[in-house]
Length: 308
Ligand code: ATP
Image (cartoon, rainbow, N blue to C red; front, side, top):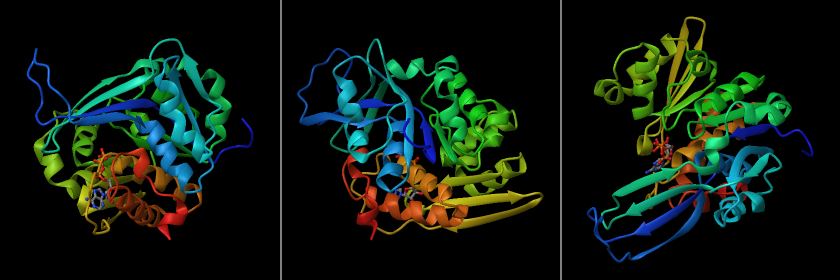
């Protein structure tokens, strides 16, 4: 790897195969789609791209397969200048998300992990120095649990953990995050795990109480994203807790796919630059507001110039 990257993302890389249909097919039924295509995706790749486009010095640690989808899955990352030296090619398919969107915008998603399933703890042996040298390490929930936990244990800088989809991660890993980045649904599930009780719908309905409970359990900081309602930023210093609401930027949203990943990538850039968490979240809200005004996930992410 050339120079030490400030931000290292360890995570998933997918090809998103999106098909548009008037209505979802029944089992056994064949329908004509109204459109579709393949675009790059995966939460790790999305967050790495968002950060790289915003001027972050970013490296992605991940895996693609030796199939036809691999190159497309990395195309925008490659163009962004992100460091892909630690993306390996393994035998078998690249991670694939098959997304079917109907006329009402309702979707069904099937994710085949493919090469992402090889991102286990031992697979990170060769990347240990890269991860431990990073100022900011960014992790999500789309690689195997032991890979996430190993990457977290290698982090000597600041750990941003976006446990989506929610995995049953080690308590110490959840509490090492600074911040834990979760939406309402994920916040409730992580809290239920930390307090060892079943998840309750009330956790998602009362986000500020859930955020305060996460901090009370020992989280150093939490960013709880609320879609068009913005985000709550909670920090704890000893017994002192501070909660700030960061509003979303009011825009006409066209497609919110990947908004959370744009937000997390932007957060990483500003935290690596030394901003405090609330300031970083205000920047991330501007970035994701631009992303929701364009179609798709990665193709919707803005550059620093576009932010003005
Ligand atoms: P996804 O899984 O779709 O990527 P998420 O559930 O992880 O999303 P959200 O809470 O939906 O994340 O969105 C993250 C951030 O993006 C919000 O905190 C907000 O700043 C911004 N955002 C999302 N939706 C909108 C919107 N309709 N208008 C403006 N900003 C938005």
